[in-house]
Image (cartoon, rainbow, N blue to C red; front, side, top):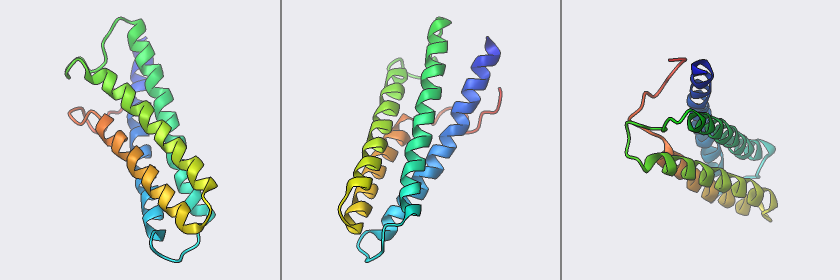
Amino acid sequence: MATLYTVLLTLHNLTRWLVLLAGVWALLRAFRGVGGAQAFTPTDQRAVTLFMSSLHLQVVLGLLLFGFLGSQGARAFAEGRPSFQWEHVGLGLVAAVLATLGNRFTKRAGGNQAKFRAASLWTVLSLLAVLLAIPWWRPLLRLFS
């Protein structure tokens, strides 16, 4: 069972970097068009969708990891303050909801500027929740250890 924990923790850790990179890419694409007369391209929408999708994957892996730890009677983040495990789960879910709303509102916005503004706002909010949820005191890259 320790192997399953190690694999889930490693995947969750690696996916964190995918989420952060996709979020920065979506933000750069969104900020590029705010205030300008550029068209909102399929690449811009792809960036927002990739961010949302990677965040959903991260949440699923995190919930599997959390469920596995709970079934073993262990506490996540034993070295942190007791409330952080619930903050981590809650902020992860909030970030996923915000990214989903951003994807939806970006697709439904009327014009190019509205799409860029929606993508910017919701990506910033979601990325902020992600940054608050990350346990920065832990190793930044954890590979099967």
